[in-house]
Image (cartoon, rainbow, N blue to C red):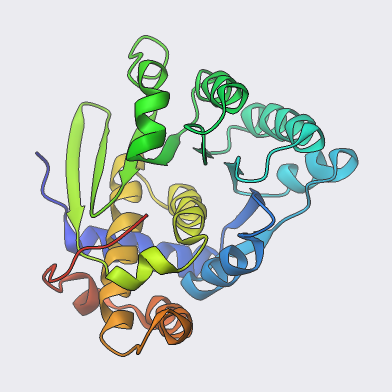
Length: 250
């Protein structure tokens, strides 16, 4: 089990703030505004167009791509295929979030197809991981893919390494798109970091610690959201060094 280097994790956050990577998010309708605000809070730049006629141009000008299947339809499928082709041609890091792959056989099949293309990372919850488990553990095709399974404790593995990240706050389970936004931050950290596994760990750690900080000041999920954005924006190395005192997550 790897121990996360907290100084290095903060260094990745600093790199995001300095480089301001643009993350193109093909994400679900429910998650867009919150995801964009989270990216801005950490220092990255979001773009959200999902129109097939222009998504290629947006991805070509981005530094990373998030593909989130939350509100999947025929048009989104076409845009995802175009976006992933462009991202792969440019060598951009791609994060796949197979939201609700456990609820639909066709969605699960599409998720397996996308993951089979070897993205930089897959962010999912435990139920989704169980459905696509055979695909994400196929080491012949996915030797370079990092898997981050979110939950009360985030489990991250890949590149022959494994790490767990505890913490967060119970209010995180009451805010929609929290996991979706984490996938976007992972994308930004991959774009700015020099080692993918460490970048994913740093993104998960930042979310957990910002959740703890926000939860300490919030009265409920309504006040938690602005407090969480503030915590992300103000995050310093001391925040990342907080002990995990409460668990939460999607």
